[in-house]
Each structure stands twice: as C-alpha cells, then as structure tokens.
Picture 1 (tube, rainbow, N blue to C red):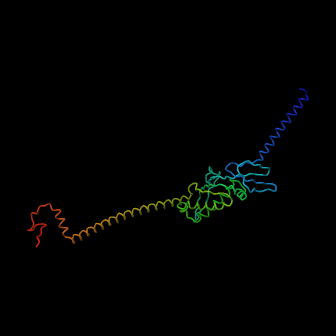
Picture 2: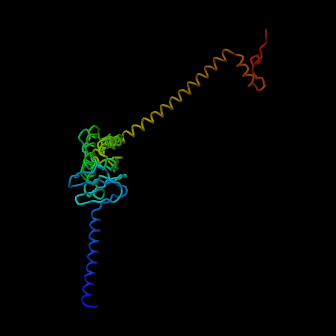
Picture 3: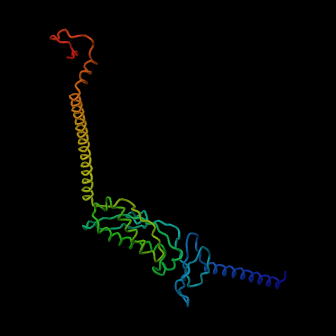
Length: 288
C-alpha cells in the first residue's frame, strides 16, 4: 500500500471514529435529557426557565419524557405507602421523630405513630405547587407537622387515663380526620394513622393508673360476689315463701274438706285394728 493510501485510510478511520463518537455523545445527551415516571407513580414536570417556567398543570403518567435543560420531573406515589415516626433511630429516619404532647392537666406524654398515605394523580401538580418538594420532604415536614398539631390540640381536651385507656383509639381517629381534611384539597390522601407502640407515660403516673385499674377490678369482683350471694339468698327466700304458701293452702283445703283427711288416713291404714281403742272403732262412725 502506498503512502497516500495509508494516509487516506487513516483519515477515513478517524472520520468513522469521530462519527461514532458523535453519535455516542448525542445519544448520551438525549438520554440525559429524558426523565422517567415509574409504575405506581405520577410525574410533575417543572420548568425553571423560559416563558413556560413553573409547574406543569397536567400530571405525567408512566413513561419516558424529554427533559430539556432547566426541566425537572418529580415523582409522587399513587399507591399506598406507610411511614413510621418513631423514637427509634433504626426505623424511619435515623433520628428521633416521636410525637410529644400533653393531656389537659399538662402531663407530658409521647408516642410513635405510623401513617398510610398516597397521592391523588389528578391533584399531584397542586401538591407540588403547595410544598415544592418530593415525597420525602412532605413526610418529614408538612405531614409530620400536621399530625403533631392535631395530636396536641385533641389530647389537650383529655385526661391521661382517657388517653392511655378507653379513648386511646378515639384520640387517634380524631387526629386522622383532622389531618386528612387538611391535605385533601392538595391531593395528599391520608388513609390511616396507627399507634406504633404504647403511649409513653411517666413511670409514676403509669403505676398509679395500673393500681387504679387493679382496684377497680377487685371492686367489680367483690360486687359480683355480693350480687351472687344476694341472688342465692333471694332464691332461698322465694323457695321458703313458696313452700309456706303451699302448706298454708294445703291446710286450708283440709280444713274446708275434713273428709279428705279421713280418706288419706284410710289409704294409709294397714288393715289391723289398734290394741287399745278406748272403746272406739277407728274410722267407723254410725249414722244416727
């Protein structure tokens, strides 16, 4: 091969490499300019520059979308998710997220709460317009604040014995209704709140509550025993009264019908006359 041929071949090789490299660069650029909305999510397109700057009013369904420079696509889940705000650093966030509140007497309490939520596909753009953050930001900020405020307000009208005892679920249901109503216009669907453990009460107060419950149980047991004794006594009285009435009725009947008594005596007679009769014959009367 002549020198000119080798030069031409080298040039063609360089041109081919340049073309391949250009295609690769263009492909990488196009790929980087695309955003994806995964299954189970809804997308919100946000334009940061130009005349169309702002949040797109229409949510994006599942798929891949062109995302030019200055455009971001955020995702919100439309399926049910659960998050737990807890004192433990091994669940939820790596920090203490427990809720602190007080009863009507100012007694300090705390609790872990879990929330199940989803996002309305139609209202997702409105949710982003309101809070300008992704799901994690909403969970850590607006949602937690709303739960805490509702819990503080509702618990302040109840005593610790009610909160820890019979009205525990009522309290959380009221908080859930308040939070759900607050977020409904913005498309965050608060489906359910759960106690993620026991409400934490000062040890001294907890001991008092347990002692009171024990005393109430003993009192109920004593009342039940008294009721049993009274019922048995009333049953015996009723039985005695019934027997006495039966005897009185029988006596009155015999007095009114003396022949019945004679008939019963004859029925029990074994047929032998007594050895001493004082001159009389038993059960025999002569008509005069």
